[in-house]
Length: 132
Image (cartoon, rainbow, N blue to C red; front, side):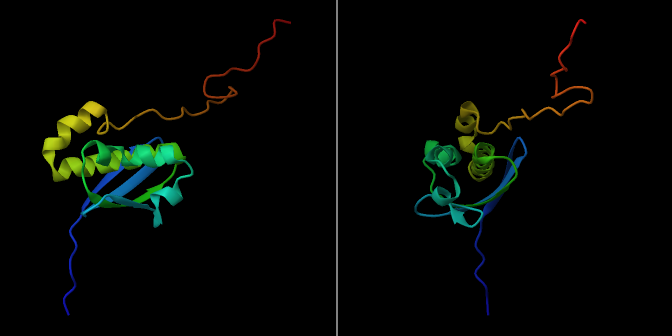
């Protein structure tokens, strides 16, 4: 009994505290599952699905994408998925690198929430000061 081995390309993308692991399998049409659900069902707004699919649609690539994502909110997860798919596409076809890089899909956005410091109300917000 021989098992058919399906080849795929895997990459990791991150944004804030969201981390996405995407697997791309060559297919006739583009499709995406996120944590075992279709992307349209997983994300509450169509804008997030569009953001996640952006790297595939901009390069006219046809892949079946399976994503495992955790942490962060829906927006950060969508951007993390886009980052992971872009990195995987770059690994498959290096010619796409220039286009993906110009669109900013290969850059990991380093901005994250700053931690709260003791003695302050938030990261930088000090308690109200009274002269008397």
